[in-house]
Image (cartoon, rainbow, N blue to C red):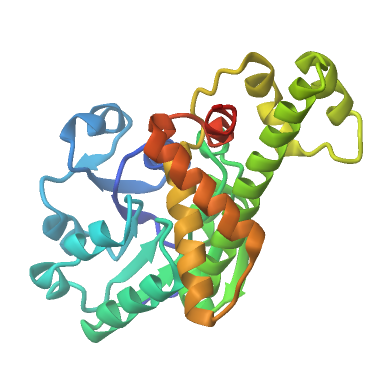
Length: 290
């Protein structure tokens, strides 16, 4: 397997994140073959020079490395079916989807048994950073697998963190997204507490923004809380999924972390109440219910 920089990449999954990330690869001079279950999403990329495939097996045959950016573990298992695994000899599979460390290790075993290499590279950031190329790449896997991927990662992200072996990159993603969920809930509760005291929302937003409790997240989301409208940059349902993954991993380790578990429970309730399509900060809407 070559240690040279990859300039030809296969990509499976063109959702909110996948589409802008592939666009950046194409703009950076990478040849990209794409597959998506909804073929209509490939049109804009074809205009930029991408090659569209009608099946995953054809794409994997044509590219030395294939990135996965899909919804969940079940989708990855479906992609890497028995027929596809026969084509993995000498190939590198890079999972950028957010799944648990346990699930990534299972996929690693599957790929390596078929003669391929596997690494995980979930990203931290939403659609804006994906469009601007300022994501954080959270890599887990061998350094020999990472090195030829550095150019591609530099096009989609501002920094790549190599945390160690497979499982640690996805673990880092769950750490970051658990913090995102906890802070989303904490700021929402603060806004509701201010309302209970009769404090103007605009005034408390300004006060928080000028205090030690300010954060880049708060600055990004403060207008949503102020206006009580939550168009999604990172959908609440996805935050809920990631919090549930984190709780599952904690249970396997016999560890109890109350803030993570409470946030997971509240985000789950928000999804059940119909707020899953709102922004992650839209947990406010569920908390505000009387």
